[in-house]
Length: 256
Ligand SMILES: [Zn+2]
Image (tube, rainbow, N blue to C red; front, top):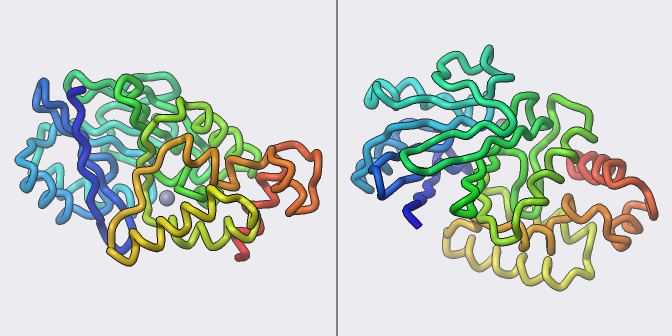
């Protein structure tokens, strides 16, 4: 393993992450919610920025890019081809199945439309790590702004199919609030109850609840469990298609 990951808080509840390849010294940041904490994290780690991986166009994911790039003018910026018009500074426009490279590390691009049309995730397959931006959160998922709800379900299903041990990094620390909704949907799930207790402990100590992993989310995240009879029953949709149950859950969460 030559990958090292450093996660740090930006703004109020955004996470930035640095991905470092110890073989070549290459370092990427995944999204740049804020330049100051990103530059500070690089300096603390003693890492030299070579790449920036963008998940989607929202300001709280890209607004720090110009300032960071001014300090590291050779850094290459990767991002979704489908949103190149809204992310004007891309050096590498990538789409489904393309590889983003950080030194000797390689991330397969997974298109995950829903939260935004062009949203992508980066899957470092050999290292069992994925950066999911605002598509999958621990115990929740992103709001669906730019596609029908069923499209977001397809995107989440792609992430849910990654190997269970895959470490999942997310764009925001929303886990505790997500847990408050999740427990109303599946109050009898012991894994969910244990996770909510763990989250409360972590947050009391002001520690992050992320990364999570796919196996943990499959066991507790209601948005990945829409095929469970208990969840279908909770929304009065026994036997319904997963995309339809997902749509109902997401709509209820929006109003929660
Ligand atoms: Zn967003």
